[in-house]
Length: 399
Image 1 (spheres, helix red, strand yellow):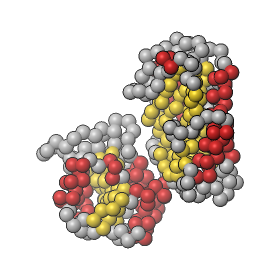
Image 2: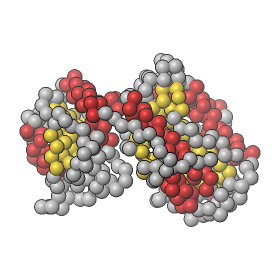
Image 3: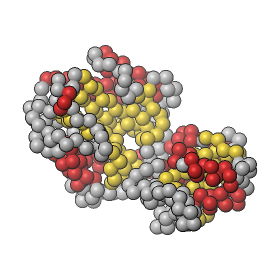
Image 4: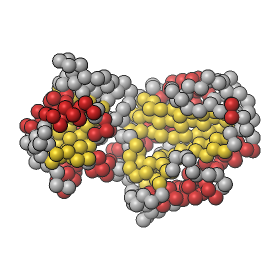
């Protein structure tokens, strides 16, 4: 069922000129809002973290894990800052050496152990020390870092501007679509490998290992694996996600169900999908829950048409769930979200007026629980002028 992770796969790339165009569009959006520029922040980690905004504009991501400031040795470790003035040269401040991937021919790159201090210098050099600027990715900054920034530039006026970049990121270019298609294919093969490994006597760790044995050779990184297993009518058999998210110490047994919800990235672009199965012979009650989750997703996808909004899609899926007799209160209240270099807009929830337009990529998901049973299903789709194309192609039913 699973493919060979070592087989040659054409690797898409984003051309350098596309990064320059993204910066031009981001600067134009800032200017239209009356801002003098943007301060774009990202934070790295050992595997995956909040890398998307700076990577989107420069093709750079610091992989160093975050550690607190060590006076005289480093500051803002694992953070990256792009200073993007609307009328001046951009500057990227990094804390790990460039390995040749940075795409910033129209700007400067500063390599430093004191990235926050050098970001302040870059703001001053660009004439933004006392300007009104937009902050993108401010959630990755610590309280200490924000206080240092304000103390160093007391006349600087900062306002949130995440929506400017999120709006640009929500519509994918042809190169991004190719990268997402490849990531979804790798994620699909990974979850099939995990489903094959989910047999009587296996642990959650065994199941995750089977997926990683495919994903890692294929060049991907695991972001998370939400797993649960159990047996209907017996809450003591219900093993929910914990830390790590595959941390159950219960081995699978005949009569159990198991759900897998995985997300990860290949070349920075996210795959996100979920499947469920019975362990041993399947029961009618298990099938009911598994099929109900699929039906909710199919109802959401059926609502994709020209003129539809994110709220229309969310309502369609949730209404389908309710019509089948499953409560929608107290659970994830959206039917999914955009994906790209992370979790993107729009969120598919009631009342969200964002139009669904071609070249969005959406992850549509639903978990349905009742009486100790659980069904989980998730697909990623590309919005086309006439509807959608599925990017995930994992086996749908394992029963």
